[in-house]
Image 1 (cartoon, rainbow, N blue to C red):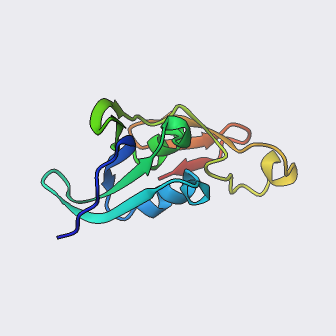
Image 2 (cartoon, rainbow, N blue to C red):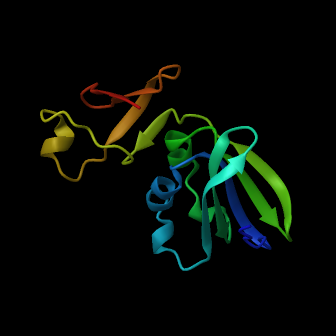
Length: 141
């Protein structure tokens, strides 16, 4: 049995789709932080069968909820203080995302102007479809 200790203060990202924890780890920049991070892959889950969990020591300043919502909006964000869950946050698909995905249209202004941010807006929440703000290029998950 694997045993990962509890957190006195930090964040637990729970209900991550199995296999997505490393994508979240790198997209949130957790590899660049100087704090303890525990990644639990393929944990048993009654609700999901298998899931990933990430435990992060410290405060919410490490977590971009927009990125998390885009990667997997079913994640539960648990805020831990003094070894207790003090708050649970649920996520949703963000209405707008910036510099998370890149426009693949070679004629888009973002392909020509290198410093321009890649901005996508949610065009169809049901199908989880985003469109480039500049050229309307469709990006589906």
